[in-house]
Image 1 (cartoon, rainbow, N blue to C red):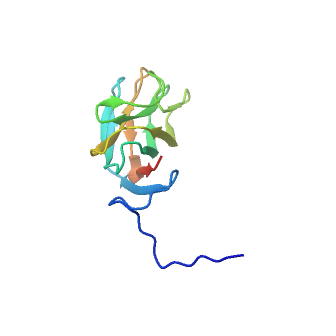
Image 2 (tube, rainbow, N blue to C red):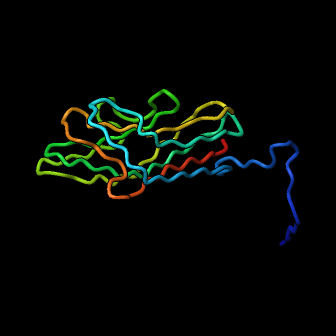
Image 3 (tube, rainbow, N blue to C red):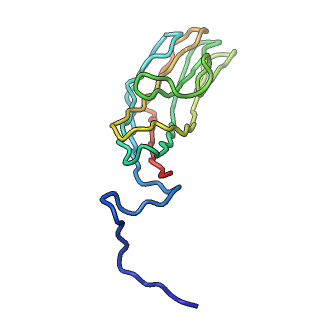
Length: 157
């Protein structure tokens, strides 16, 4: 049996050593800024994170952890992810997350993921949009000083 001992490993390019499947960049933002809407269409919550991929072939793994609240009976809380001005995830009507209660207010603490292929090395912004869909009420993100997080990970392919 042999042992390999090294003090450092250097890549042969300016981008360094890249191993497929590894995370090479991590961005996380957190907010407890309250945002509310009564819209039945998706609206920009103002909650966003940006990443500049090192390689155009990289995947961006998006992880959202949101705290949503709707105080109306039959109220809906729905959210989705946009890359820039383009919606990139889930069903057209109900978004990536969907909360509902026919007996009064509800809290929708949701965590979801999306694996994106932006095919760029330019700065890329991911944004959370929220909606009451069609059932009314007021949808509040980060009610009662709760927090929401958005994490972006660049994965080498």
